[in-house]
Length: 247
Image: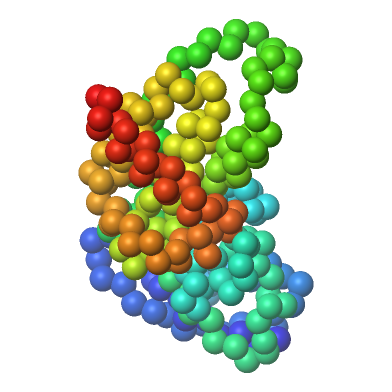
């Protein structure tokens, strides 16, 4: 099928960018979205042109690297899907597809569709570590944890840090990401000693990095490829309030 791509090109964060239009006349519906970009880049290289820079790694929906804003939606038209899991069969012959990078001041553009998401790393680093000494490998049932809490912690830990929540939010808020990282430890016994210090430090760094405020519109939850729940934001807000009291 024939596909027209309008791709954001920008040499670096200090230079202005613009959309460039490319036409691919023979795209297989079995290609993944990133494989289609590989084909386009091969053509650009053969022509002596600069290939389009974009992030990717696992191509299995695990690493969170494939950050593309496709036709006005983070990761494309499907719900619960990363860009690398998106296939061309979900588009039609003759479609025009607009591809942009994440748009957030906390995610400065490196080049083309690549953005610097190291702000997420600094938020996680602010959370520190757990001081519970678990020693050698122990039996799974040595620390009793209610199944409901274990399930919620597991759901929070499913966050891959892709940044879709930030890109989708009208305020570029990172509350869904940060709350998921807070919850995965706050719900477990091992995370209790530093629970309130952890949330306070992570929220402070989140604000320092320039992410916006949450206004509870819920767009982040809808576009999150792992379906992280807004319930984690509520838990983080409660823990943050408590941290200011017990500090």
